[in-house]
Image (cartoon, rainbow, N blue to C red; front, side, top):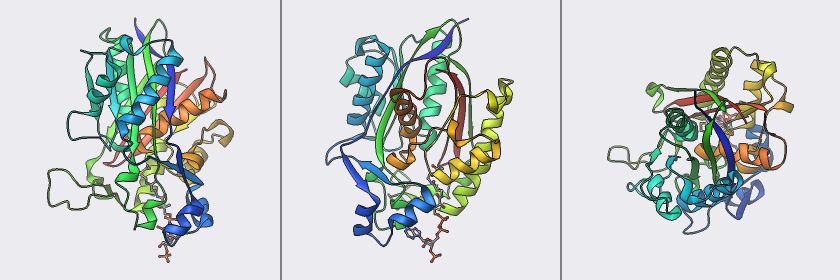
Amino acid sequence: MIYARIAGTGSYLPEKVLTNLDLEKMMDTSDQWIRERTGIERRHIAADGETTVDMAERAARAALEAAGYGPQDVDFIAFGTTTPDMVFPNCGVLLQARLGCRGAPAFSVETACSGFMYALSIADKFVRAGEAKRALVIGAETLSRIVDWSDRSSAVLFGDGAGAVVLEPADAPGIFSTHLHADGRYKDLLYCGGGTDLSKTRRTIAMSGNEVFKVAVGTLGKAIKETLEANRIECSGLDWLVPHQANLRIIQATARRLGLPMERVITTVQEHGNTSAASVPLALDTAVRSGRIRRGQLLLLEAFGGGFTWASGLVRY
Ligand code: ACO
């Protein structure tokens, strides 16, 4: 039996930092309001001309270095993003050209904040099937380009960045299971136009924050339970929850419902804001590099986003 394991992680954050105090100068908001409602203190913003694939390349190279592989070793690229550089070619292909791993399949998944988790699930299947040996899984976003900077209720939430993992075959899991879901009935609660439906004239993020919050907390709790049950383990058996970093209150409410102490939850939302598909791999890499997450530990990853889409997975790092 072949399993997939994470051979290495990497991430990249743009140099420019936008603090809550900076936002106070741009709109009618306050550091106190943003901290109390979201936990966010600062976020990174891509430089002029810096794109999603630029950031993804930095994260991918860091993950490959950590895994001990070179770009030429990559034979599969799954790329989660909701802010692609172009309509086509997709970001996976653009990244493949940068890395020079010609011929390897490369594609993007546009499932908003759960894009990385969807990409991870697909890559896991290909490694397990013996069809990929060095799979690069990316979550990268330039959300600052689709934020409505005149809408204070959403503009304060988002940030830019990229995260990556390299999967390789292993005799033991690695990735135990992944669970993907979607419910398109919620499409109007969180969306961004700009596609071929010309009636959707809004090309920036539109969000009904309160409704998103309520559905997110309930759904994430169920997603975590589904993952635990599928693997016949209790929450107490987890070393770390690595949640989607949307809002500290969503993360705390989810942890509370599960009886999981916050000491076992990785949070980076304070520093990164909500980076959508980049959020989980960014949090993972940050915790790995700081020494909090160590080899052999059991992690539960989860994400929730526009659609709605949501996903979770159990991983032994
Ligand atoms: N600064 C100051 N005041 C603000 C701001 C701001 N940035 N934004 C809104 N307000 C005001 C509102 O106008 C309102 O004022 P009023 O009472 O005079 O009308 C008041 O604050 C309360 O607004 P609410 O929207 O009720 O505030 P809430 O406590 O719900 O927090 C928030 C809003 C932070 C958006 C919250 O609903 C949330 O986090 N929702 C989840 C959204 C999310 O995370 N989306 C990301 C994508 S999905 C995902 O990743 C899970």
